[in-house]
Amino acid sequence: MARFRYKMQNILSIKEKMETQAKQHFGEAKRNLDLEQDALDALFRRKEEIERHAVEVLQGDLDMHEIEDSQMSRIICDQRISEQKLKVSRAEAALERARAELEEAVKERKTHEKLKEKQFDEFVREENRAESKSIDELTTYTYGQKVTDNG
Image 1 (cartoon, rainbow, N blue to C red):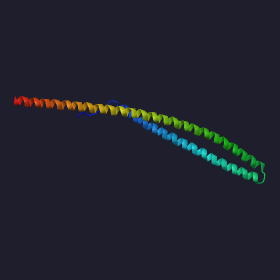
Image 2 (cartoon, one colour):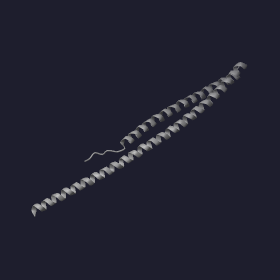
Image 3 (spheres, rainbow, N blue to C red):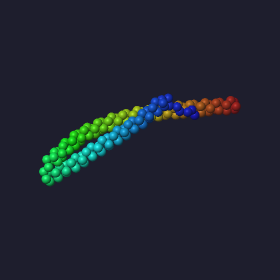
Image 4 (spheres, helix red, strand yellow):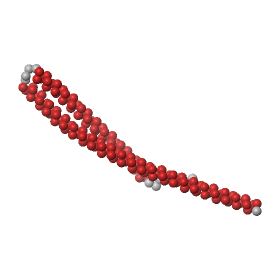
C-alpha cells in the first residue's frame, strides 16, 4: 500500500501554529482583563473606606480641613474609578478581538483538517480500487492459466 501524503500539510501546520498563537494572545488578553477588573474592584473598596471615613469625620468634631481632605479623596477616587472603567472596557474590547481571532484560527485549521480527511478518504478509495483491480487481474490470469493448462 502506498503512503498517504497530504499536499498542503505545510499550510495545515501553519494554521495550527496560528491557532496556538491566537490561544496565547487570548490568554494574555484574559489575564489583562482580570488584572484591570481586580484594580477596579480595589478602587471600589478604597472608595467605600473613604466614604466610611467621611461619615466618621462629619459625625465627630467639625474640622474643615479634614472634611475638605475627605471630599478631595472622594473626587480623586471617583476619577480613578472612571479611568479604570475605561481601562476595563478597553481590555474587554481587546479580549473580544482576541476571541474573534481565535475563532477564525480554529475555523481555518478545522477547514484544512477536513480537506486532509477528504483527501485521505479519496486516497483510501483509490488504493482499494487499485487493489481490487490487481486482484481481478490476478484472478483473471490465474483462471486463464488453469484454462490453458487444462485445454
